[in-house]
Image 1 (cartoon, rainbow, N blue to C red):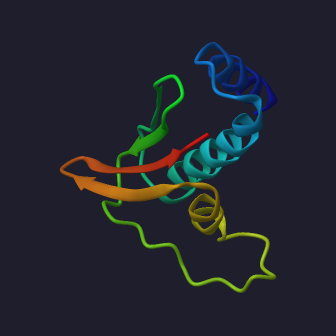
Image 2 (tube, helix red, strand yellow; image 1 turned 90 degrees about the vertical axis):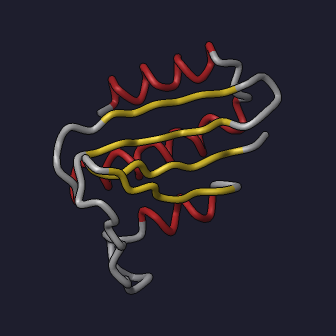
Length: 110
């Protein structure tokens, strides 16, 4: 995972994502990808888009289930808080269901 993290960090730098936003973006990416791998069917795809001085949009598309609802979790539990973390860090976030699965997305602003 550290190699992927390093690759994504370099990619974010090439997109001119401010350093202060990169750590939040890496955490959101990690949570969305982990959610796709843990709760959905393959394949999973990561898409990152950013316009200079604008919104960083992160999308992870997977093969379903279409509208996975995160379980209610105890704040003391080690697992199950990923989407709560995404909600805390993102300006906006959501899920779009489609015929072959779902896309979970988050937007971060500088």
